[in-house]
Length: 441
Image (cartoon, rainbow, N blue to C red; front, side, top):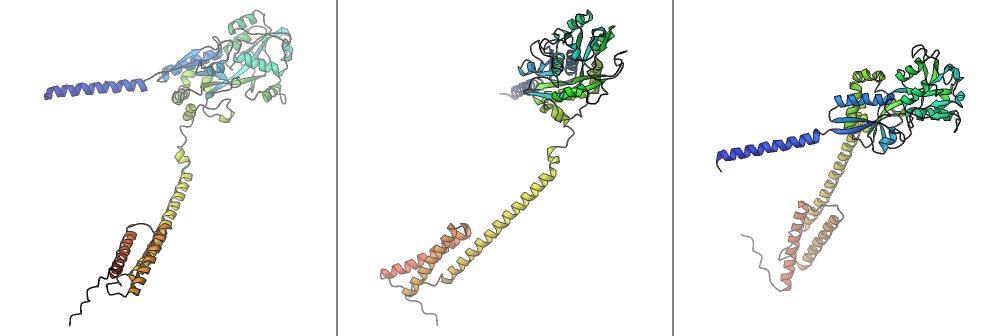
């Protein structure tokens, strides 16, 4: 293969490698995650709220595509999420449906308005008995909170004619006087409530006198902890109401299934607060959202992805626990120093014992030769044997280590014992030693 061919082959291989990396990168990091957001039924304020959120998410958040779906007439939004038919929902703080639901953002309060005709002799909730009352679609937030309110006043089956229908149908029937009262769940800027009260002869029903001590709204909240009470000021909707009006309400929440990954939820949470202006242009109440809220009062715990956004300015855990970690490291260092000190003392003690054994060896070593008397030779042999037993006993008890110093000591001891054994063996065989040389004169 010539140099030109080799160069071309290498270039093609490099380009192919880059292409594979780009495909992997776009496939993994450029993947768009599709999420379904269930938000009430078409025509409701909650559906409009969900639509506004989805439009901002789809234009401001990369890698996420949110589709708005309607809840049906059997299940509320939370049940739709729990059955896996949606991943996100606009729900209410009093919604039924415990399970793997997590809060992303508390949005704003919605209030339950009761609009009645002046001439129907309806002055309070109990006087709705025997009346035709519109509750909106089955399973809607309006329906659930209205029934909760009526249960508080002991409205049993048949106490009033409770009628469920779509919001447009409910509005139409109320205008035609086919309904005596209608319940509407909306914000303080609700266009539906404003249109109802713009009708001649309608008024807003107060649950109780707001200035009264312990009004009925507080009693309702005692059995429904996630319900809020509120006073609608005079002339909030044009000329009506003509006096402060007591109502109950709930918090609208953006929630998610606990199974949704943390990162897309973190980005959705960030988008809500970074694009409040864009959201407020669609739903004015969204301008009031605030990330500083009491997390202990949430109906559903925070989603971990949302928590990451809310805690973005908090110091890392390593800084938060710096004092504790520093104390732990100090104790660890002190403990390790103690271990090293104990080990050093042990080594010193072992060295002292080995030095003592070596001194005993020196006291008896090199005293035997071919002319040493038998009795003295046996005594030397016994002392060496005893020294050997002491050395191995200390080794087994861990008072000395089998290190190089011990090995040298053992080699000296063995060599000396072998020399004594040789002399005794020669004597038993009758081998006479060579005569000792006379010292030179």
